[in-house]
Length: 197
View (cartoon, rainbow, N blue to C red):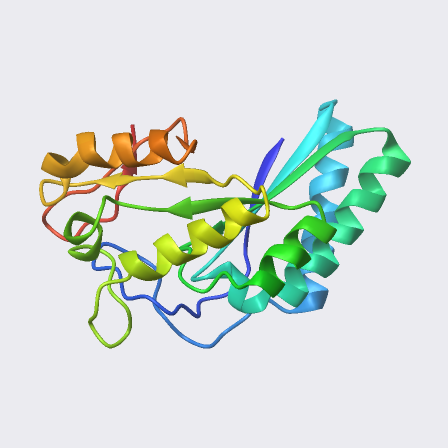
C-alpha cells in the first residue's frame, strides 16, 4: 500500500503550478500517529504485504522532526506485523544540508527531488519566495547528496514552458547517475494543477 502524508503547507518555493495554499500549518503529531495506525489497520485488513509512506507538503523537510517520529512509528508497526516497509520524502531539493542528509540516512528514508529542467527551464516554473530561480540551490544539494552516496529519485513536471529543455534535463540526470520517477507529471498552461499521465 502506498500512502501519502501531507506534513506541512509551508514551503520555501512559490511554484506557479502548485495547488497547495501556502501557510505555516503543520500536521500535528497526534494526527500523524492516528494516520499511521489507520494505514496499518487498512494494510492488515486488505492483506497487503507492505507499506510505502510518502511524506509531502509544501516542503516536507521543513517539518522533518514529525517525519522522523512517524517514520519510526511506522517502521516499528511494520516489524511487528512482519511487513515490508519503505519511506520517501518528496522535496523541492532547495535546502538539503549535510545535516539533513545525515538525518535521512540515519532514519533510512529515501529522497525524491523535483527538478523541472536545467537552469532557466527549471527556474521558469520553480521560484523562491523572493522570485529568484531555485536551480542553483538544487544543484548544490545534488552535489552534497552525491558526496554522501545518496541518490534521490527525480520527478519532472512538464509544461509547454520547459518541454524544449527535457532532452538536456534527461542528459543532465544521466550524467549524474540519477533517474526520473516513473510517472510523469504534465502541467497545463491555464494554472490548473499537473495531472498524472
